[in-house]
Image 1 (cartoon, protein in one colour):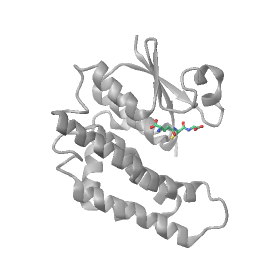
Image 2 (cartoon, protein in one colour):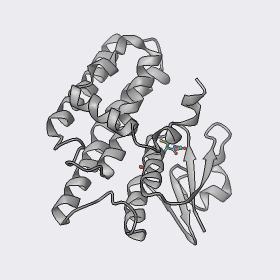
Image 3 (cartoon, helix red, strand yellow):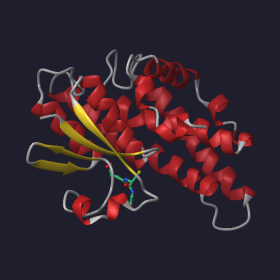
Length: 215
Ligand SMILES: N[C@@H](CCC(=O)N[C@@H](CS)C(=O)NCC(=O)O)C(=O)O
């Protein structure tokens, strides 16, 4: 029985899991959930995830939510698939460290900026934009300096790359809505080259959020 994958378009953690399922070549049944239609708060979905969020998977009789828990579960449950936590204990610790740094850093910073752009609570506040944009650009610089090779943790793609990519992809969406942010051009060269590598993955196009493709 394939894994059931509950996804919401545009959700960075859900995109992370989608990339992982594809990278591993695992069969899955794709369930596109609508935030607007309230799909995530229906009793049948809350029975799988009491927080009513995506991503959520169901593998046989096992339901799991939280993107990082899901990616690690897939890694352990399907050890014959391409690895996202490769190497020895220390290598894997470094991948986990990256994922934590991404969740605590750039993910929050991009979310902060995206909230200002997509869900403004009042009139445009130029100072808030400047501060939020500067935080994103500074963190991209830190990540670029810390990169260990073609990918975040070295020569091979890992869970860290799949964790980061959806947040970097959001920069183009932000520029699209507010071109003077000029975030794409502000990406350090190693980040731009790394993003192009992710976008060249054979399954990448399939995972682009469906509502982004409709634009
Ligand atoms: N820490 C969670 C975050 C999941 C999350 O916040 N998902 C959002 C979409 S990005 C969601 O489903 N929000 C709907 C809601 O909270 O009602 C993860 O990594 O899976």
